[in-house]
Length: 301
Image (cartoon, rainbow, N blue to C red; front, side, top):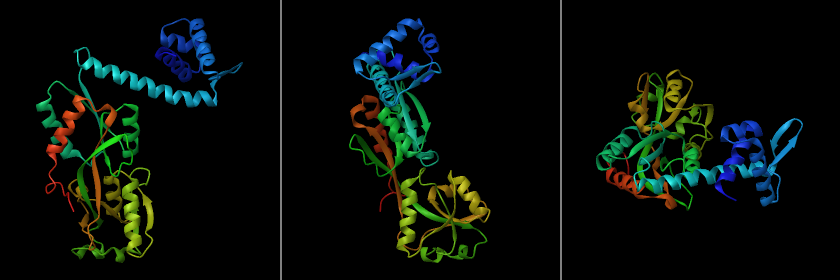
């Protein structure tokens, strides 16, 4: 089996039409059909169902498609890395990041990296944590900035930011006059929260904090991004626990108050695949480590 066979298979699987796949591959249909048939014989499994209604993937074909895409993506990435050393491919660093969470800090890191590595093109992709982890394994990004913990032995991590959670409530709320707010007094308050599939660690932390304070939170709505969550608080829909940095982006009609108990933190940082950490990734991680300032970025506890 060669990489070209995987490319042929992917084209047919995505088009579900041999003629269209052949046109996409700039080849004739009969040779393409033969190549797919040979691939199925080599694997001893049918990848496609062919009938009068057309072509469809078998269950084995569905599974094979995902692996084929990963293999091609990794092969392309490996070729790009090699080509970077002889000048045939522009040097590139693709960074995934949590939208809003790392704005200022990431900007500083990129500025420093550009000064030390001026020939590297930087591509930014705003993504939540789970898609970033998938993208790292697929070779679609080189470095991610995600919520911790990251429980993947193949990935390396560097803590960058420990951000405190604070309570946000409408300015006219009776509790707004307090300098700090005990969690227990929120037991009867309607609460807004990020969806768990977006920020699972934040969601779980908030639920745990409420349970430790002796109550089950009365969640009335889930919302994201943070700006929408705070807008709903301003509208009187409920209260919410958010990252402290949100205050700098939305402070109209609401107040932010620390929790009276010990401050809860969300850990965030850089993550990269240890099997793909070439010179460019290592240079960037060096900049990340040099940029960390625990006091300035609310880190350390």
